[in-house]
Length: 174
Image (cartoon, rainbow, N blue to C red):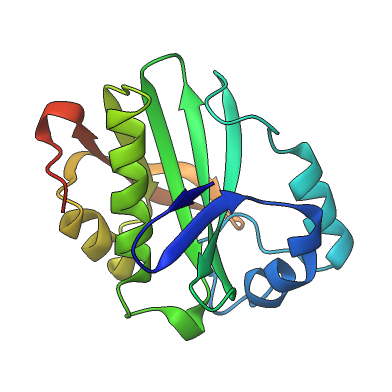
């Protein structure tokens, strides 16, 4: 478990199922997300298949974002790629967006990954139409490294995919 100024990041648990389903199942709010469950059971299966251990090579680990009032407001997937690289993705309940929570959670996670776990590079994959996520990545001082044209088959169509990244030596605690 990790604590920032206003947030707690902790492992996703089965007890989070209903709260996750509440915001993850909203199709319109999650148009760029690959996991948009249609049942509580799908969420349970999602939680059960995630790694139970943080920092295990070639696994995805899910953290939930908890506000200081104990309200679960989002989740972060962390993909450990080998020993030194990490990919992440974030989903924040629409009701809590534009309050700096995503920025606070991710910049705190970057600090942990770079300074406690000595990671070399952190990346994120984003659909270039997802303007809000791109704004967040830029605010996190990540740079756009590549724009793949129609490289990802997503929701019955070929879409573009952009990769953003930051190196440990580029990271400044924000």
